Length: 242
Image (cartoon, rainbow, N blue to C red; front, side, top):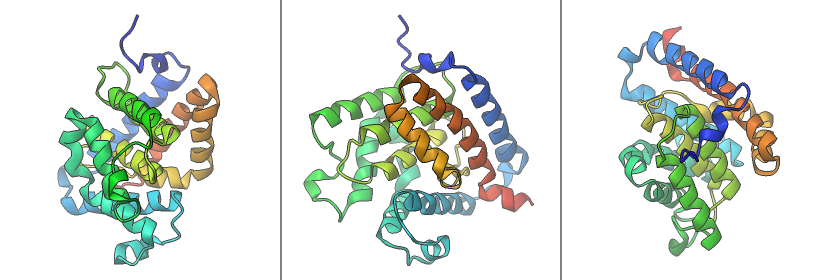
């Protein structure tokens, strides 16, 4: 019996080829459009755009201009606060994913939930689900890194292990995994913006993951191959190169 928790997805029709095509497109943007010329400012811009998009998906009504000016609503400021700290958690996510996820929630929910709930699962069942997600992050696998990020994102949304901000944490974890696993080490893609641009499909396929069985999970993975291609095109690198 395989010990690879992601082995099931490799045999799904269209999934391996879809992720291969998405990775090829990402590599074109990140490398052929000037990875050698990237700067911390481009990474910061990508993180800001991602924070804004994630906040809107969570219910924020702030515009990108308002977020850029520091005048966004509470949800937007939460997303920006997490984005500011996110890349410092790369080594933690590699070694201690539970600690990284707890820190993400603590940063996001500070001032919203009581201190004793920050970074802590809602209950024992949620704690078990959170440990299972952590194992998905660190388990050796033959699955594409993009697929692992997609699966972890969906599991976190479905499990909703924390008392608040689960969507923001899930999208932040997805972005961080793309960096940790070498897909986008400088975090120049904007997956959150892709999910926002494809919002109807994003939300529908997340529901499918939670309630649609194997077919729903298959559909989510196919959706994410499209979303990751769009995430690369949403990078500030694209505008820089044009």
